[in-house]
Length: 353
Image (cartoon, rainbow, N blue to C red; front, side, top):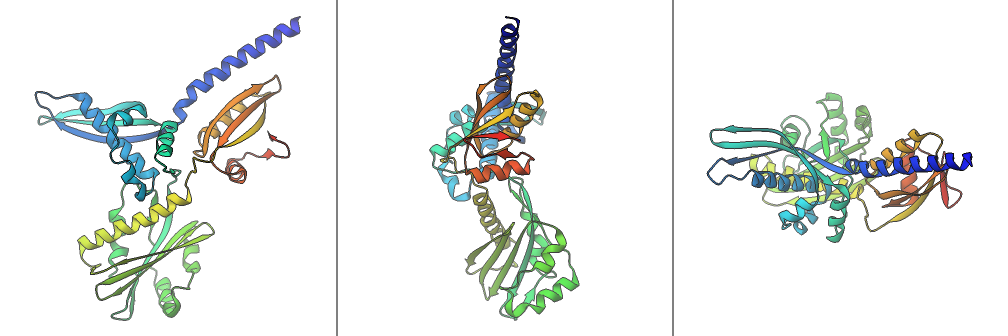
């Protein structure tokens, strides 16, 4: 009898613990957009709520610009404010002030991740994981009029590329130093530069990703061949511009913005979440140490490809999780291996080692 009573107390406490963590972990499932700055003239009919609503809208589109490819943005641009508000979990006012009859406010907004993904899925849009990464970027102008390679000096792209970056970009561009040895090496490969892998230069920077942009210029025609290396994969992108002057500041700005968008879209596609795939995975976790399950849940919260998870049963020795994953079993195992989790996958219910 004492044993049964002890067991009842154990399961009652465990049930409360599970309920507590399942209700509080919602805050881990949000997209945080910070430093949204809004201003509005302080007039007779001033309405602070309208200003905050404007912040919700700006924050939403800042988030969406990081999540989806440029081709999908027109599907969303007519979204109603009420729909945006329905996806807001919380917001905070970081700073507010009045200057010369104008109200200024800085807010942070937390958007519900599940609601955002559900909204995009209904629009037939696959979101990307928001993964910010540094790429080595080597832009080389091949001037076919003068039969010359413009690498560092007098290369407006090398000198100004990062002047056009913005905060919503996922790719951070690192341009190489003006190394005379590298310049001579590149020039020595000029006759077969499209086939040169640039490995000797890339390896100096210890980065996993790189972009080699070969910009062919002839009269006012510009053709770009981009070799984009992501881990061990190589992607080729071609784009052309007619009646175009790279040395004109406004036209160069247009060129850089369009080219950056091509790279951003490829990176988003590489990290895309196929929300139409909902793979159920069943995982057994040892229950002897509560910290093990809490750490496991915290890790699951950080994986965007996890659509949902829950504890569908438990006993004194084990917790049994059902994880809904937007991808393949191999993808899940690889992601969790990188987070120092390993599984015995021989049976239908996997065992966390």
